[in-house]
Image (cartoon, rainbow, N blue to C red; front, side, top):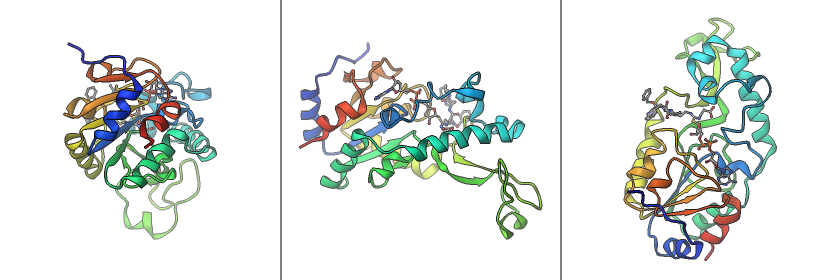
Length: 245
Ligand code: BV8
């Protein structure tokens, strides 16, 4: 029996005020009003005919390193041009006013929560602006800077640089996942903002928590059945009102 009922922001604001521990679980919709296309909408140009799940894999990168690298370059350029929105800022401001009361768990690799000033962001899927080695680095890989290219590589052994994100089929970073599971288990309110709720284990956090679940999303999502309240609106429009004193 689905729990969800159309939420009224005033009731949710009372839940926020009464909550001892809050988790914000965010997805691409959190950054949409900053100008970062959501995962579903991001497929443009050369990459349009590929589903993100097809490109964001080790197999795809090994098969077509330059093609996948250029997809990440395009997304990096987009992220570098945008700013956190009123939703990101409202969360960071609440955390400044109430240290330790709200934890941000994000699927986003854009770093906008961190740029808005949110402390201790648990970035479950990594960060798009950083690189790492594709294969475990050998001495030659770290002896000198990578050779420029798309992607850059070790001049000696050809080991490639890859974006420091979690690809489909890859495990999430253990520390962040454990901390996110702990925060979800300990919170009495989870705000699920801007996610379609289809990617696991991230979406599973909203099903595992014993806290009240509130969805902020202008459209239906796969997690609506798990919600105590669904607010049909956008992150930047709703979060300031929900998190203000
Ligand atoms: C793993 C980084 C162990 C890369 C990403 C259980 C069931 C089914 C499948 C699985 C399962 N367990 C594991 C899987 C496989 C897989 C998975 O979940 N597949 C899905 C597609 C079915 N999971 C994995 O592979 C994970 N690893 O499980 O390892 C393992 C390994 C092998 C086999 C078994 C287990 C790794 C998952 C992480 C992948 N990396 N990103 C990169 O960015 O390039 S995922 C990436 O896609 C994002 O990080 C995010 O998580 C996801 C996109 O989802 P959303 O963020 O929700 O974005 P979307 O566009 O879908 O939706 C946007 C929403 O916002 C919409 O609802 C829209 O209405 C709303 N919106 C729009 N505007 C606004 C708004 N909301 C508010 N305000 C607005 N203005």
